[in-house]
Image 1: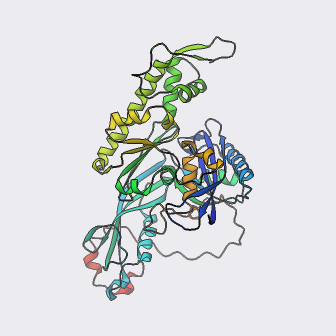
Image 2: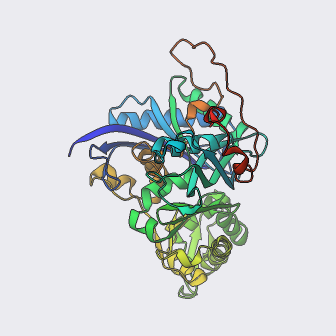
Image 3: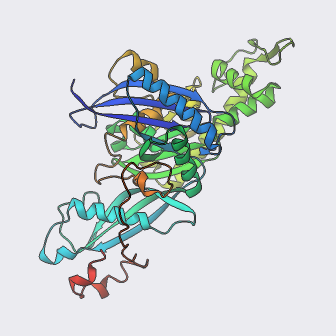
Length: 452
């Protein structure tokens, strides 16, 4: 099969750095496979990444450097450009609407792709909380004149072009620390795209039919759980909950009287999401302290502890879906991913709580090779999705939903070119109610609309 672009994803998680290098198909189809060229997984010290945010730049930079070197060795590639994940509780999502008057509309020209892309680009100046930067602009429905809920505006005629958007923003200092970690790993390393982690994961584990029918991705991470709802191939809702797999581990550590490291191993090797069918007489011997006799733990108790915490997560997800108003649109149900999605019978528990169909998501559309088999698990889903983000857009209706990484004024990446003279910036329009002021604008000459 012919190939073209080589892409590399770097997933910065709370417990590990995961890297995947891949090569995309030349056909450019959304359903084309990718070939895994290299991969790696390197742990980060405890506390280096907290709730998805980089806290210790040096420790994370060192882990990224090691992970890139390992992936480079396996793929025989000199990695210079990467896509990087971003997530955690410091990410905020808001709903905003805006619109423009099209200067060319008076001559009857149709809405062009350039008009739509310009409208999306303008939303990067949307009002958000202080010390936050817009990371993604995700269009939902567009408005062309009096036509509401327009899915595809290109080709329509109209004077007004507007839209409803999900604005994903992130803490500026967290973004800065992420970029500094990349620079610490390699000062020549370039970040092409910074992608909200669950959006990247969706590219790896969801298929187009599911996103059209209606599907909710539930990514159970170490410290947080993310929810992304798709319908009609459009992202409709995003939410993050400050609870994840680490809370299950801590519950086991407390409930069984063992160390966190033992509890994590207990969860992965013996964890079950439903306790009803677990016999009462199965004992697990845990070597919890050197020089001490192993501690006996009932598998039934382990299952009971895990079940209660997972019920809480499932209930929070279900309540958020109801709150979003999209419950009836989820024909495809839920797709679970993240480390805790590997717990046995977790699908049955979520089906019981949400009354929706549930499956565990694994990376799809991979060329079947030994390397692909090694990464076909939830641990690599986000990194594979970041590779996909370099080959296809999350929303094909627009040029990109990602703010260029170079737009973040971090100074983390050393530029080889000589700096160009600064270009004077045009004044930014004051925010106002666009549709209320439309009637007063419509009669003005086109040269007063140059700012649009």
